[in-house]
Length: 348
Image (cartoon, one colour):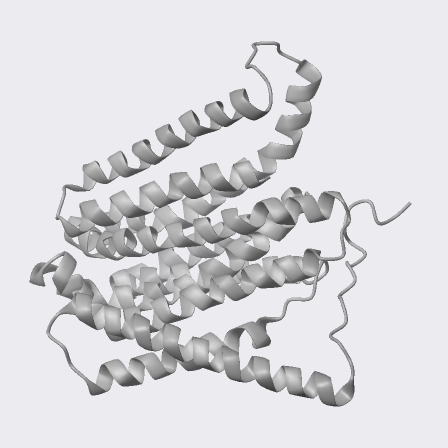
């Protein structure tokens, strides 16, 4: 599983890094595809090299039974991806028809920035997905711990990005796209909230895929696509791109709620314990950035990052010391969670 994680991390790191470079250098939109092509190409080459070195030689033998099993397991994921594509793209089509190409440009501006941020979610999921699969396949009791660590990582990154994005929205848009795109700032502020929602739902979806609950997730993504379609038809005519942005967030909330209901049947979802620390540190970060105005956006983001990571480190040390003191006083250790009954193979 660690080979899969390496190749995926390599692919998304290249896409993320090259995509950021092309964005900040003002490259044409079509050139952003180069980042994806480069990442996928290098990932394929590295995957083939790993297979040849550590596993077996490549062959062309076709097994209908194996292909049938692979398709049966994979089609729900493909269909879920189609529904995700629908509720992430349909709003642009409706905006084009109802509000014109200028509104589409303002709206897509937000998606370019936030879509790049979403690659970070993919990196996080690829880091935790292999151990989730291994733990589920071997029915290990550490599955809930791995899952909740992925939740902690999702919130650790998405909350400061969301807070900082809302605070610095105008400066970010002005820095990347220029003053002509400033009318799109309100929609950007709404869509940036989707970071927390998307990061969480992606982490929970990884758990469901790891325990082969793909078919159940299809229904949830279908409801998300349906909610997005219906709401867009009502919201865009009255509220324009801001209505489309709000609709996207609401559709993601529908998906997150459905995924959460499934995930909590498999493992306890410790949202509050994972939420409060990054929330508090991100709040401190925003207060500091609000008190000290710096002309350079890059330096501002750097200072915000230092404040966030520094306060998180200090708070983590403080809570760790307090927990250790409580354990020493009570003489008790933290109990391990048992894997819930919905895991495959737990029933005779």
